[in-house]
Length: 242
Ligand SMILES: Nc1ncnc2c1ncn2[C@@H]1O[C@H](COP(=O)(O)OP(=O)(O)OP(=O)(O)O)[C@@H](O)[C@H]1O
Image 1: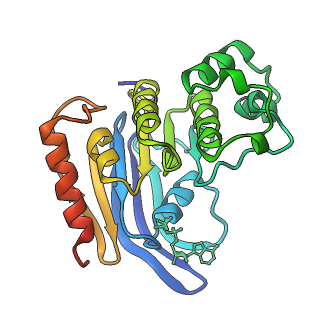
Image 2: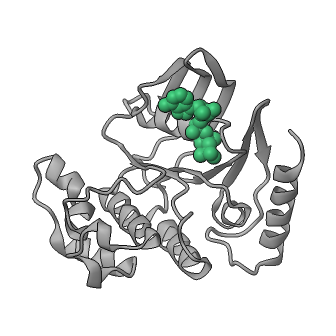
């Protein structure tokens, strides 16, 4: 395991504009593992991710978010937000290397081009985001997140705009690049959670439910019988009333 990738713990309650969103909640995100978080729309998954990422300025959160090494989370996280959030005035290469630019560091063009090749977009490096499809933009955002090479990675529905084939390819790529990182991934897709999750939780209005992940190494094969069974169980659970 990467020694610098800590476990995360969130303990607390969230309100927005006086309205209860979630909690009291206790979530542990194990070190060096992928944790998948599912749950109905509006239950607070993005809010939870944004609170951990320290980019939330609307939520009244009472509680604490800590790393197992007791160090500050600042500077150790990368967030791939819902929606691509690409800079429309920069080309694809400029967007993928924006982290270095904002930090005043030299951009690693070779690595960025290699990353673009891995997401199948090397021929689009000099296009602006406005000239890309939704799925292509999402792959640029994924490349940008992976370029950051952080110990803690927060992903909010990172593959939602992709076709089935590309989605599994990007899941494979993410699993390879995020090996031994501490990853919290919000997804609406039970198949994705069954393939990718070392740990799986469902957030509902009544709290957090743990789901036993299927056996096998992540990313699990798409046609693995136990993974398919776990996917079916998850879907049944998500369809059931809370
Ligand atoms: N900026 C905001 N101002 C007011 N309410 C907000 C704001 N952002 C989120 N909310 C509310 O907080 C609740 C949780 O929203 P959140 O986006 O975290 O849900 P979610 O589980 O991620 O949903 P989805 O699966 O649809 O993305 C919702 O009821 C939403 O309406």
